[in-house]
Length: 140
Image (cartoon, rainbow, N blue to C red; front, side, top):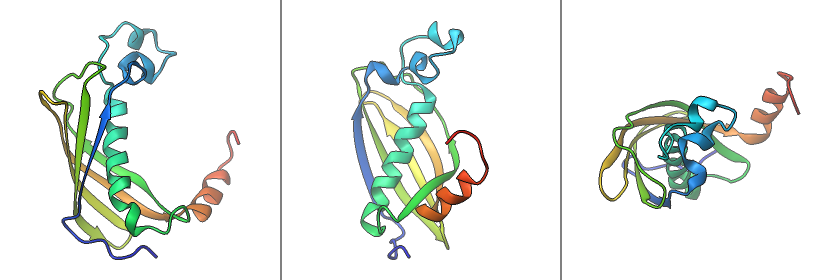
């Protein structure tokens, strides 16, 4: 089981936004997305916030056997970020309830605060989780 994670644990992660993370790249099949302005897609912003939380937890996990999965996200996306700018995400662990981990998250692109909110993750046994998901069927 995961080593005890201290409430208040903080982590920052910076990522330069490439053209592959704009709205048109989120779902290339979407003609609607293809015509939107070339800015960081909200879906990719969510991924960056999740990645920051995962990185915060890595020293406390028996990786790759133990992992975490996102279970809830409630964030704003309040400013547009073009490719070429770097986004710095900040995560602070605000609560632990058994296998559930709660974070306060923010993101800034060097010019604007682009996101604030909360994110929850759940501790999983990767093999057991994967077996369960594969038992649901679908493409393998």
